[in-house]
Image (cartoon, rainbow, N blue to C red):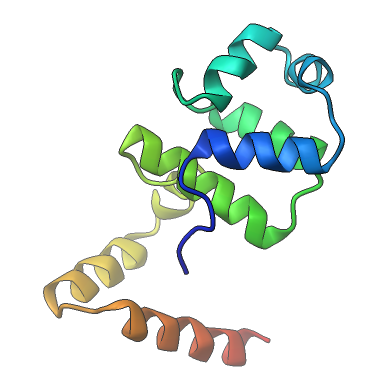
Length: 124
């Protein structure tokens, strides 16, 4: 768990450059200006919208792990839950129940890692 990058902008810049995608092309794929992407990559502008994050994940050919990191960094920068999670949480009272129980019981990172591993074993 955790992220490998310090910021959303650093993640975006490094990933885009590793893929050999120019700033101009990336901006065009997302339907924004290159100047806007520059501001985002320098963390002077809020991260991309949830819709643009989904497009960015496709354009950058992100692995599931990298996609999760991108969403986590975007959420952290906005001081919100990662943008890919609210839709899952809404309408699922059991998720809110589980989160509150974990909070109230003081669940730590090891507790959550164990829970995830057990869930993976059951769900395959």
